[in-house]
Length: 91
Image (cartoon, rainbow, N blue to C red; front, top):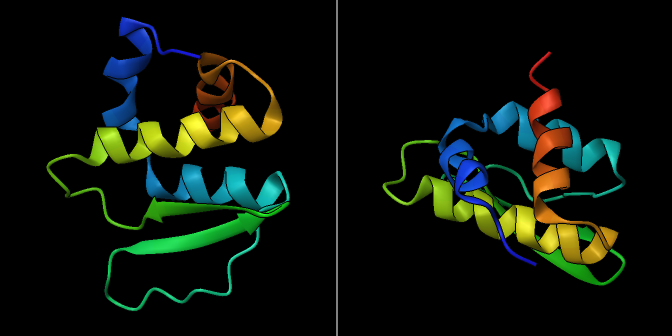
């Protein structure tokens, strides 16, 4: 599954709280405190995701894309659909 150019342009605009809210709402859990590493590990059904907890990374959009790609695989959905739902969390 691939991202469209529009999807790629939106990755940098995903906010940390959107990621975390989406992960919690879809059953992912994390016992990993923010230990200064600027990432948090989330787990579900034997999968794990390393989600950024800081948007200042030069490659922040790529890190978000990795999270969305994993979510799409686990949820058996298109990445763009996952991204749309994740971005809805802004409201």
